[in-house]
Length: 363
Image 1 (cartoon, rainbow, N blue to C red):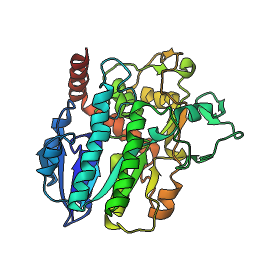
Image 2 (image 1 turned 180 degrees about the horizontal axis):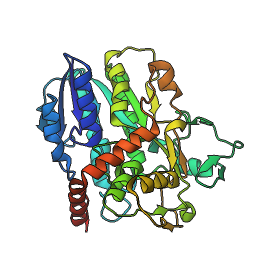
Image 3 (image 1 turned 90 degrees about the vertical axis):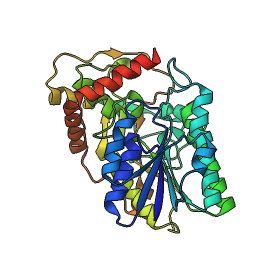
Image 4 (image 1 turned 90 degrees about the horizontal axis):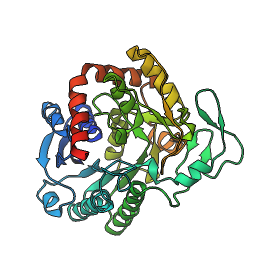
């Protein structure tokens, strides 16, 4: 089996490529990346050591994809993942965001149509309605928001957000590009008869992640503490009560392995993947963990005002992935976070170069 991974030099792409290469003998893994994200080039030796072939190219350019070898499957990890992209100064413009997140997907769908390749599309929890999530009634405990248990909307249960939750706008420009990509992928797969799996992920993080805020709050918090740069609680009163769940890229790869080997499985085409309640933390709980790990003192500051596209609570209901694929996160929340903090501590100079370089590039 030959597998093409886009965005192969990012954290998610590189770790999925490595896991696939390690787990399945006889699977040939190659990937494409334009290396535009600062620090992504440092993953090239990591991939080479694991036998993953690298091609320099850009998913926005159809001719770059045309030049790639034949693949039986494409795993699409290429995206601008920032929910603030197109809205905040220093981020991609709306046109740039759409070009990679939707235009790139369309080029990949053409690749799949012509090559009769299957597609695993990594989508996002940001396809779910931000206004609907903000309308859910929550109680405040000393450390986090918790669902009030009454007046909950369809698709939201004690387990979290299920696939039937509202995807009505507003989502964010980022969320809209990913939802549009899902729709086009389903139309292509139906119209041109190739296998398709869509995985809507919450936060994906772990050791090896650059720690930029747009990659998810867990690695960002760990890397900030490692550099002695105290992060702030932003929004919802500035108390850090917002809740997220997470998994590592290697855990996501375990599901993808199952999907690659079962193109005709009687399973829903679209499933949520995430840590669930057992792998969720509020910002305050995350801050407490990092403060203890790094031996930091003092109180974490907060900014009361809430930014556009923020949500107070997102925990994944991954019951469909569990029922149809037998997939569950394999690592405990604490173990994953400790490994992430330890990696950040051991790679301070690398992280500092990435962070300082990013600041220079966007100011």
